Image 1 (cartoon, one colour):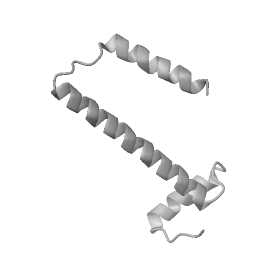
Image 2 (cartoon, one colour):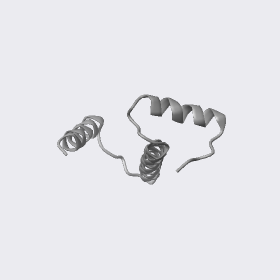
Image 3 (cartoon, one colour):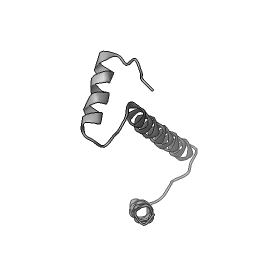
Image 4 (spheres, helix red, strand yellow):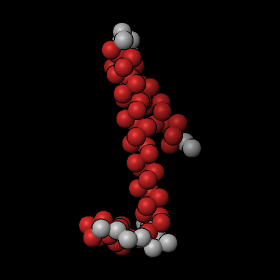
Length: 79
C-alpha cells in the first residue's frame, strides 16, 4: 500500500527503509504503531501506579522493585 506522508515523515520512512530492517512502508508503519501501543500501555501502567500510590499504597521497596524488573527481563529474554 502506498501512503501520502508529509515530507518530514516520508523522509523518516525512507531512512528506515534504507537500513534494510524494513522491507516496506507497511513494515515501518506496523513497527511504529506497535511501539506507540507499547508506549501507551507503559504510560497507563505508570499512571495506575501513581494513582495507587496517591491512594495510600506504599509500593515495593526499591531493591524488590529492581529484582522484579530483572526477573521480568530474564523471562522475556528466554522467550
